[in-house]
Length: 276
Image (tube, rainbow, N blue to C red; front, side, top):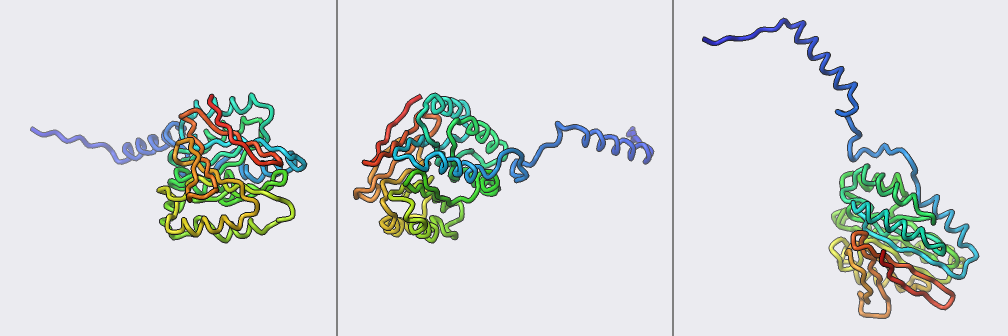
């Protein structure tokens, strides 16, 4: 014999309402969407720190820059990296070359931001290909600012480029030649030398390799170009990508526990690999 249970409609409605109210009251059941771009805390970090860098380095003829990259979710390694930089009193500023996150979520951006905010020296951060995932590019813009930017420290211009062309399916101007040309000719009386910084280097999987030769040609017009610096490949490497005298320095990832310090003097520059 089969039995069927019947419940009064009023009781069913009341039970559903109670369940809905309990659910709404429980913080454990609701969280911010991982790709929501409503983010609290520090924002427009690059602009604020560039102002600090300009003021602190305005009359310096020697600069020391810590170059780090690809922290992803190696947060303990990233903390140790920050602590190692902080124990040095001669670092003028820090440049993170991108892949601040692994999947571009808000939490990852916040975790990395909280770690980098502990740096004693001001820092700027480029966007990496992992930072684009989901709405990660919007989050980057909110927290750090434009994806192409440049600034002058001392009499050296640092030109920071978004080179993650694959993330746009090659339909956007990445790298942005107009921006490069603009910065090569902007405020030329205020700088004598320059450094070009990017996440993905030419001929890598993220770069628009259809324009690699054009990119090299544009670099010829960069005033006093000393070298180029990149991340992405998780290797410390020094190479002449174009088989000429222009050196490209690859900065390793946090997991491998090393970074580089670039020292710029009136006579040139030196690169030192630091293990921690």
